Length: 328
Ligand SMILES: NC(=O)c1ccc[n+]([C@@H]2O[C@H](COP(=O)([O-])OP(=O)(O)OC[C@H]3O[C@@H](n4cnc5c(N)ncnc54)[C@H](O)[C@@H]3O)[C@@H](O)[C@H]2O)c1
Ligand SMILES: O=C(O)C[C@H](O)C(=O)O
Image 1: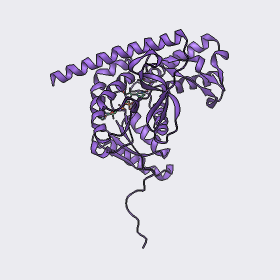
Image 2: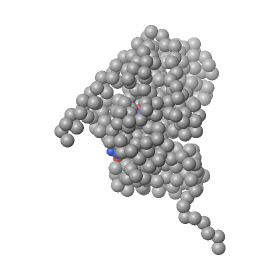
Image 3: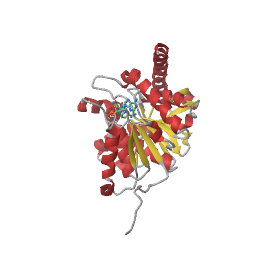
Image 4: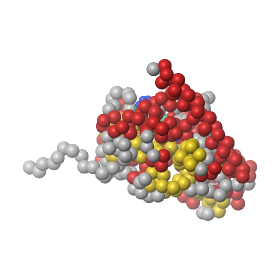
């Protein structure tokens, strides 16, 4: 009789922990496994739920033809030695809410989840997804004790993908020939850059009139809100999971993709001590470099307005957390 070991083969020596097994977290786990990127540990506070999702995803392995292990858990010890930790834990917004309205609830969740996850994976690279994104990334960085280039927020890849898809829908051109750039905070003040958005190298400013571009920019800024209004019970998760998995892949496989992501600035774009969306080269060290685009006065001013709003919200979030700490 031939005997096999009961343990599943590992697809790679890499492990990604996803904290929060809700819509975004579970879809991200699926993307990572089905692209054969890494083993996944999915953690949530709800008992049984991440275990059930992991089992469901595992039962699809033969059909999807991948070899990644997926584990569901409520215990941070199971996440130990992860290469990448992704925080998706927290509440999503409902119709009529802004992302900033989530700050009070999500700040505490993100800080606690980050501290607990990084305690078990001190060498991990941390990707934050929870909203309000730029504020949560700052808080997670402080809570983690990690060097700033190892902490990254996911938003710019998603916002740029939305701009890209709206341009493709407008012009009927192949999406793979469109490159877009969206900087700034992940909110109404984000800064889509038409001059740095091209179709096969030609800026869209040479292809579409100002009115059309402004309409697509407006739709991009409201890209998440449009879906929240349609779905009524939560937000987008397919495109957010795809955007996060692109970042995970670039980090795990040292691909050095240059994409907009929420990174810590120390003088770039005349901004300091803030996490905000800028083009970054992502590789095994996290943010390997920040690309400084040559912005016009108007573009730079829009980025600074967005940054000022993030800065005010970080201050507010820190005050909230301090008040909670004083009560406890
Ligand atoms: N950055 C972006 O571009 C982007 C895109 C999409 C969603 N988001 C944000 O991501 C977050 C998650 O969205 P979703 O649609 O997956 O929500 P969801 O409600 O489907 O999932 C959130 C999960 O977090 C879990 N959770 C709550 N507190 C926790 C804790 N302390 N520890 C571990 N898990 C905990 C919940 O049980 C739930 O399963 C929201 O804040 C949303 O706004 C951000
Ligand atoms: O819009 C939201 O609340 C979720 C997310 O930030 C998004 O842009 O889809």
